[in-house]
Image 1 (cartoon, each protein chain N blue to C red):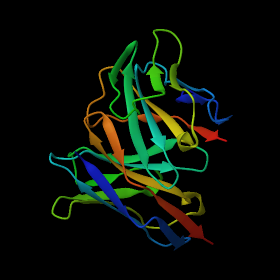
Image 2 (image 1 turned 60 degrees about the vertical axis):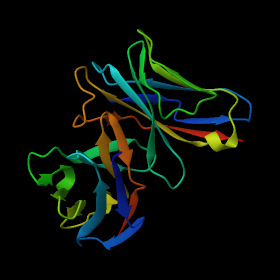
Image 3 (image 1 turned 90 degrees about the vertical axis):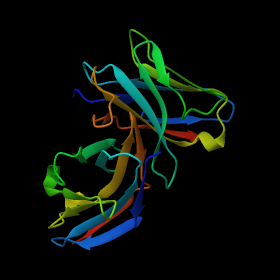
Length: 111
Length: 117
C-alpha cells in the first residue's frame, strides 16, 4: 500500500520568507503525488500534482514541488510567503482511486 | 459556483441519533468519494461510488455506516446510532466519467463537521 509522511505538523514563517513543507512517500509502484491546501472551514483545493511527466511541478499561488526518487520525497516550496498562505497543507499519494493523505502541516505566517 | 456541494456544513447529533450527510458532485461528475478527517489526522478514504453502484467500501466501518449515490439526487452518507467517536469532518470528492485512475484529480467539497454530544 502507498503512504506518505509529512514531517512537521506546524511551520511558522515570516512574510516574504521561504516556505518549505516536507513530504516523504512509500510506494511499491511509481507514485502519483498530490499537494492540497485547506483554508479554515473550507474543502481541500489542489495545489499541484506529480504524474511522472516532469520532476519539478509548478502549481497555483506560486507553489512548486520537486519529485526526488532517490530520497522518496516530494517537498513543497514557495520562495516568498504571503499572509494568505496561512492554511493547512496535505500531501497525498494515490493508491488506485484512493488518496492516502499525510497528517497535514499547518502554516502560520508572521507579519 | 459549480463546485462540489455538501450539506449541512455543521451537524450536531446526540448519541443514538442518525446523521445524514449529503454531497452533490460537480456538474458532469459521476464518481463520488467520501473521506473522514478525525482531529489531528489526515483524511481517510471511506467509500467510492458511481451512480447506483458502490465500487469500494473498504474504508467504511462495518456497522452503522452506509452510503448511496442514486440515479437522481445527491450522494448520501448515513450514520445510524451515532457515537461520540463519529465526531469528525466528512469530506466528499468527485471526478468526471472516465477517470478514477491513479493520476486523476479529485475535487473536494467544503465538508460536513459532525459533532456528537
